[in-house]
Amino acid sequence: MAERKLGVLIHGAGWVSTQHIAAFTANPNTEVIAISSRTLASAEKRAQEAGLEVACYDDYDAALAHEGVDIVSVCTPQHVHAENTIAAANAGKHIAIEKPIAMTLDEMRAMRDAIGAAGVKTVVSFVLRWNPMFQKCKSLIAAGELGEIYSVETDYQSYLGDWWGGYEEGRSLDTGGSAMLVAGCHAIDALRWFAAPGEFEAATPVEVFACAGGKRKGSTRQYNPMTGKWSDGAPLEYDGLEIALVRFSNGVLGKVSVNFECIQPYTFPLSVFGDAGTIRDNRIYSHSDPEQDGWREIPGVRPDSSDVTHHPFQAQLDHFVECITADTESHCCFEDAVVTHEIALAAQECYRTNRPVSLPMI
Ligand SMILES: NC(=O)c1ccc[n+]([C@@H]2O[C@H](COP(=O)([O-])OP(=O)(O)OC[C@H]3O[C@@H](n4cnc5c(N)ncnc54)[C@H](OP(=O)(O)O)[C@@H]3O)[C@@H](O)[C@H]2O)c1
Image 1 (cartoon, rainbow, N blue to C red):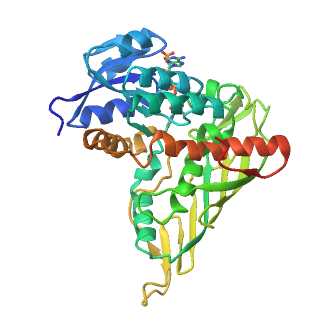
Image 2: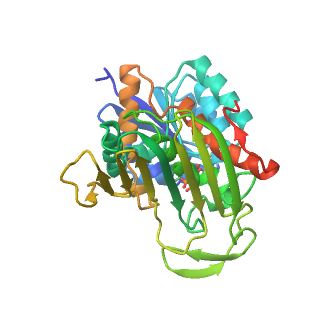
Image 3: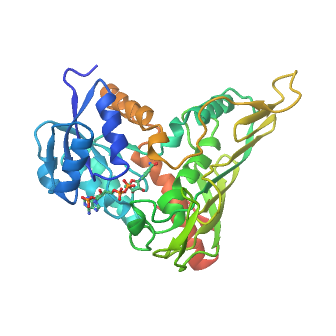
C-alpha cells in the first residue's frame, strides 16, 4: 500500500478517458488530480461528468508540472501518443499508454529511449489480456489442457465508422495508419498472448506475411452497426481488410485478421490448437479429460463488444498500480507492446514489397 495516493493526470478527455478516470478513481491507491486535453472545455466537461473537482488544462506541459502527478494516462489519438509519452517520461512520470502506442518504428525507438532513460513504469491498454474469458483460456493453456500449442487464430471484426468519436483521426493514413494498427492491434496482441504457453507470457514473432483488401477503402457509403443504418460519411484511407500470417520463435503459426467492413455485430473470434486439445471462442475440447465427449463451455465475460465500458480497464489499471508499488515490470509494458506493433508495421511493409518480413525490425 502506498503511503499517499499516487496522483494521476489524464491527458486527452475523450471516450476512452472515461474508463481511465473511473478505474483510477476506484483504485484505493490512486487519485485523479488533473485532466488535460486539446481544449479546456473537454477537460472540464470530463471532470464534471466524473464528479471530480480537479485541475483542468489545455496545456500539457503545465499539466505535467502539476504538483503531485505520479502517473499519466495518455488517452489522446494515436498520432500524438509518441510525443505525449516522451514528454511524460522526460517529466519522470509512470505512463499508461493507449493503443496503438505509435505510428512508426522511429516513434517507437524515440519512446524506448525516453522511457529507458527515465526508468519509469509503463502499461499499454491491450485490455483483452484482462478479459475474464481470455484469462480463463490462458490459465487452461498454461495448465497444459491443450498440450503443446501449434497454431492460433484471432480476428478483430468490427465496422469502424463515424459512430466512433476518434474516427476522423482513425480513418486516415497519417493519423490512423492502417486497420491493423488502429484497432486490429488488439487481435495481434491476443495472437501473441495465446501463442505462448506461460500464464503471463506473449510469444515473439520472427516472420510476417500479410495481404490487404476488402471493398470499403475510399467509399463514402458507411454502415452503423449500432443502428443498422447506412449513411454517407468520410471514407477509410486504407484497406478495410488485412490478413496476416505470423511465425513465432517457438514454432507456433498464427493467423490474424482485422475486418473493418463486416456487416454483423462486433465479434472477436479465437481459435487455439494444441496437440492435446482445442479452444474455439468460449469452448474447449481437451484430451486431458478422459470423460470428454464434446465441447465444454469456458465461463466468463466474452470479448464481444467494442464499447469501452465493457472493457476490463479496472483490472488492467489495478495491475499497473500494483506494478508501480511493487517496482515490477508489467507483462504488457511498452517494450512488450512494441513487439505487437511491429507485426502491424511489418504487414504494411508486405503491402509495399509483396514479400515476407523478418522480425524484429527495431
Ligand atoms: N484500449 C482500448 O480498447 C481503446 C478503446 C477506445 C479507444 N482507444 C484508443 O484511445 C485513443 C483515444 O480514443 P477515443 O476513442 O477516446 O477518442 P476521442 O473520443 O476522439 O478522444 C480523444 C480526445 O483527445 C483529445 N485530443 C485530440 N487531439 C489532441 C491533441 N493533439 N492533444 C491533446 N488532446 C487531444 C480530444 O480532445 P478535445 O475534445 O479537447 O479536442 C479528445 O477528447 C485512441 O488512440 C484509441 O485507439 C483504445
